[in-house]
Amino acid sequence: MNLRSLPDRKPFLTAALALVTLAALAAAAISAEPRAKDLFGAKKLPAVVPAQSFGFYSKGCFAGGVALPMDGPTWEVMRPSRNRRWGHPAMIALIEKLSRDAVADGWPGLLVGDVSQPRGGPMMTGHASHQIGLDADIWLTPMPKRPLTIAQRESMSATLMVDEKTHLVKDALWTPAHTRLLKRAASYPEVERILVNPGIKKELCDTVTGDRSWLRKIRPFWGHDYHLHMRIGCQPGSPGCKGQEATPADDGCGKPLAWWFTEEPWRPNKNPDAPKARDLMTMANLPKECQAVLAATDAPSLAAVTYQGGSAAAVAVAEPQPTEPTETISSGALPAQASAFAPTPKIGIPLPRPRPGN
Ligand SMILES: [Zn+2]
Image (cartoon, rainbow, N blue to C red; front, side):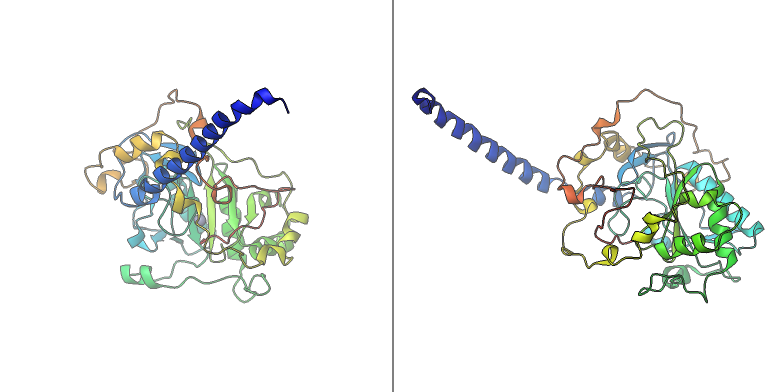
């Protein structure tokens, strides 16, 4: 060692100490920041502005949301107290279309679960995704003949379609009409993927004959045993929307599906109390446009932002606008395991992760 370097060691140590202190301060500042889920969860209405999604399905928000009406001729909204019947107008239009097409296919009507919060963003409970108005849960329970009361919509149990031990569909419950519903949802070009329990994917893989090309969009995932989760792509007018990589071109019935029927995906979570991304996210973790989305003035009334077959005054048409590139979506402040961009696949297979709420 060169003796002359010795006097330099002290400044180096000081600098290192300063860095550590800075990091601790930054961590403290982050923990004092309000959580994005509290801020977005408190919003009861969106603003009347052109529809636009910002960020990714599990890390973003959206402007110009509209509500799916509580009832339609071919659908009913479930768990209304959650106030999660909001979506991008294209999503709400598609749910209504699916409900009509499903009835034409012989399904009695849709029970619609969570779409998004009025302005999207992370939620207090449940989903990691559903943040940009482009995800919707549809129950695999047909709409009953008698209209459900509000109380029934809050309390009625969903039917679990998959045996928890075998991870196979319950034969007594699965019908060709369930398969037709999934095929119909997958048929829309806007729909990029549909998440279902691996048991449901396997049932389709084992039974669908003829055209199997739509199976590509049916993606196995934890949970999703009582509902299908329909995800549409980024919509025109949303340059800040970050799309998901395309699903592989094959039907997904081979090796990736077989992994779900090993014990690996079902190992107990070693760290069940670890915080989830939504529990840590602050506004700094979301695209910066989400600040404006949050701050915008409420619509004058619920009626003004309830979708009416595309004729609602509030359904403004977004014009493409130049926006900043999407690097503003930073995951820097989150522990890697809590990041919405947590590692995916070796061969397109999701790595085991804490089982999501749904
Ligand atoms: Zn979902």
